Image (tube, rainbow, N blue to C red; front, side, top):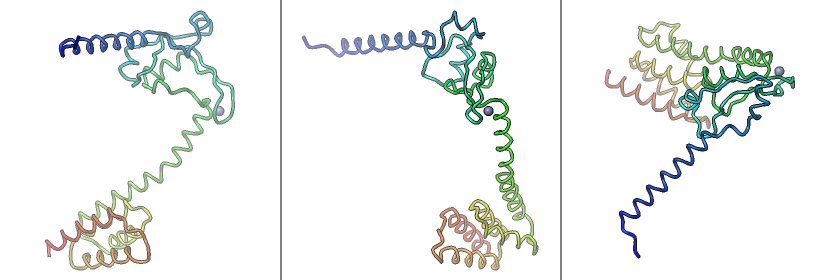
Length: 214
Ligand SMILES: [Zn+2]
């Protein structure tokens, strides 16, 4: 007998309910990657707050009932370490670390790594600082020093600085800046140097603003 649309819809709905129940049941299963409870309590464990995990630790996978200390080998120095249950609870439920993330470095190596990253940061900060200063220059009448700074920025290897330098010239206005802008863009499109499109966009915007003002 041919099924009616109504029957077909009911069947689809029933299958959907079944699937939802199955995945809910899967979520309630203990994390198979963890040791069994009896052993877990022997080496120290912490109960997991699944509500927090479900809310913050973006995952479709299994959630643990509890945390147990995990031995691991430091990725950098090879030391044998233990990631304690308490540390894990803090990591997943307070910091909301991704549910699949694991401790990979010992404390000393984590500190050393953070130090290295911090020492690398001034480059990015310096660039941000220079960009901010260039932008501020655009708000005031240019003096020789400001012009020199913009010229230096036009030669920078950082395109973000070059773009802000172009915008600053546009804000300064005047036939002189329009001329310099044209010369700069002409030089950039010569000699096989890559003509960066954001520079071109900035230059076009600056030039049309300049020409409107003339
Ligand atoms: Zn280490």
